[in-house]
Image (cartoon, rainbow, N blue to C red; front, side, top):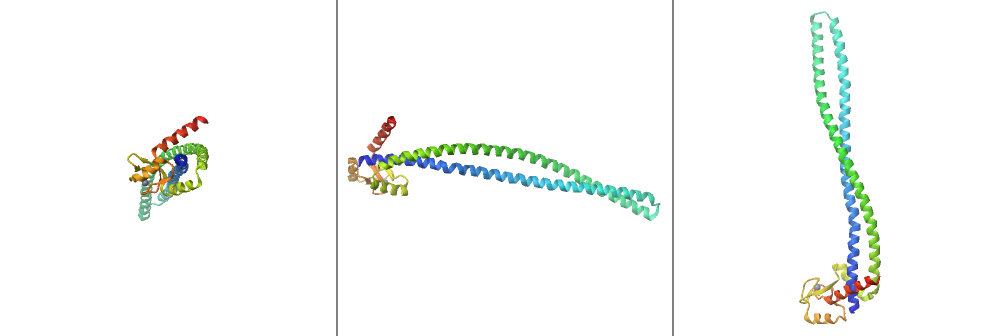
Length: 250
Ligand SMILES: [Zn+2]
């Protein structure tokens, strides 16, 4: 049983390593997805900005055309004015030309303001395009790095699982069942009893009678409070020693 306890302690260590690498394998793609989502968001913002700029430019072109039409109308009206000789008709035609001139100059002023706004808008889009390009490049770099890291971790987790299985194969099936059932519920299934006879899992005192049984190391005992498999510290030292020895062998 002492050997089984040493194995369980070792198995738990292996399981923790496997879980840690599995956690990284899961977290890395999530990190990448979050970055890609951010990129998609700013790309959509840029597309909207470009669309609005395009609409404004179209509006400005339309206004240009209208302005040219107005100028032609003024020219026509002026020509008409020269043909009219005095009287009411002349005054009316003159007023018409004046009104058209005023409307045209208002429109020209409006267009100038619009051009300024458009220039500012274009400059903003250029800046945002550069920002988005930089972010896109950074996401691409991160994606490459994450892919490489994932491949590395896949290899690691494969090796760790194989190592873990070697240890697990030496654990007796009935002991393994108790270990697995507790590990499922509590995470840590095997814990040392600390100085003063306190369970390392739940920090509750172990009855002195049970503590004496533990010292003999010939049975698998559980904490009466948290049900975790408990062992005396000496087991941990022996497990470490065994790992050290197996390392020098290979
Ligand atoms: Zn406990």
